[in-house]
Image (cartoon, rainbow, N blue to C red; front, top):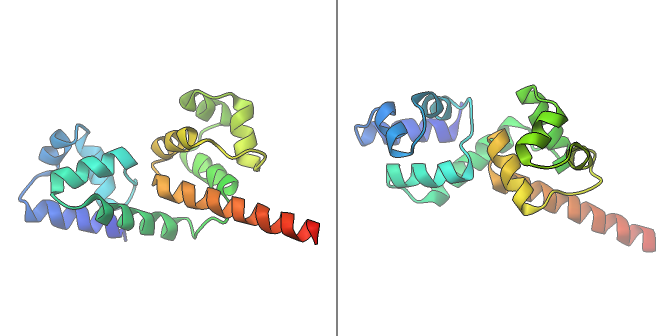
Length: 158
């Protein structure tokens, strides 16, 4: 069950819109709208903003629902690197394919996935789009990584 998907379906029906009409409003396919409504896919940050306009709701409402679905679906992956690997595997893509889509080197993607380097905000936004993941989820995981690093630094200095 997808909280976001159920909410999108209900709101679309309240507005008496078809999936085709919504798809035209947000410049996407009916397949994408169907995938959002069934929870097969999580809309990108940009798409959530477009959907909020089409459905006449505050974007924050959709962000929160999407975040809940992502966290629920991934059992709150503890670290960004682990999350990125799982998301890539879910799509069945190689690091090389992801690197090409991101416009980064394969080595950079590898470093992101093993936790040697956190991606920039720009790269996280691209990961969000490619993996159909809420950008806030990626940012939250990056913050957890930073907090974990600070805790380890304090323990080393003690």
